[in-house]
Amino acid sequence: MPKIALLSAGGTGGHLFPAEALGRELIARGWQVHLATDTRASHFLSGFDGIEVHEIRSATPSVSSPIKAIKAIASLGLGTLSALKLIRRIKPSVFVGFGGYPTAPPGVAAAILKVPVVLHEANATPGRANKFLARFATTGARSLPGPAFAKKARDVETGNPVRDAVLNARSPFIAPGPGDPIKLLVFGGSQGAQVFSTLLPAALSLLDDTVRNRIELTLQVRDEDKPACEAELARLNIVADLAPFFKDLPSRIADAHLVIARAGASTVSELAVLGRPSLLVPYPYALDHDQSANAAVLSAAGGAEVIVQKQLTPEELAKRLTEFANTPERLDMMAAAAAAMGRPDATDRLADLVAETARA
Image (cartoon, rainbow, N blue to C red; front, side, top):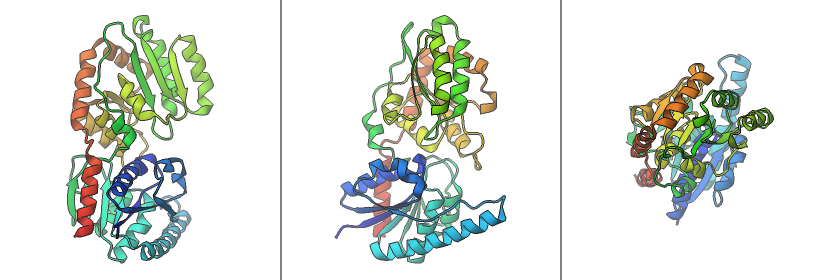
């Protein structure tokens, strides 16, 4: 009789991509896998074939509105009741939470029903849902170096599982030679980043012709920003590929000489596994400043440079691009440092940990 795992993740790529990777590996090992998440996950479920998906009610508690806070607590309570019914029906051997408030109801339900709880934290600093669930954890798994977040549980640094598309895109980094095209990839995570689509053309216009003429740009841009951005890049004679979302992003990262991006957990993990140099601009409005912490880890290893958004002017970006273009050896060193931090075996390590926790 196969073992059964109930995975749960918030409805963003940063939560769901590691869950997808673990789910695929557990299925390959003969497990049955279920996923509990919320309605936002629909855009990221293409990789969950063979995994039964259950929609569980949840909400993010508000600190600014008592009425919203009460509604959120009620929604989380109803979600917990649904999760209790689900767990009693499917009888999982283990629960694995990947963060986000949709993990709270099934995580609490698993603890009530004495199902072992594994919590995976993708970021350098734990999110609020994992902080809440840590009291129930049997095992805590971390992607990045740092203190244990589930202090009463076994703590293991596994790395962050990445999708097969990332592992399949791995290739040696080759820095551009003098006069060669410079492949620049700019993206802002699963929701894009307006700041890049407005800032980048202005920065490129400030470059010396000898640098600007070498740029081959791939830019994630929102639909409403695309026409203006496209027109400005055309005026500058920049070879550019613009789209609101790239389904083949891992292969585009692998093809890049330099990546400019936010510093979400999945982005940082994929840059490390693929071994590509980056300029990271952490999202400045995150409540827990998790992206700043993620970027700091990769920067300390030498695999990235970090700049806060308020300091990212067109002039500063043009200066950085010029420096990168004129010092390919710097790109080589950053790529090697990023790769040294990569954990391509993270999925196997986490799957082993989940199986050990279930047996225990």
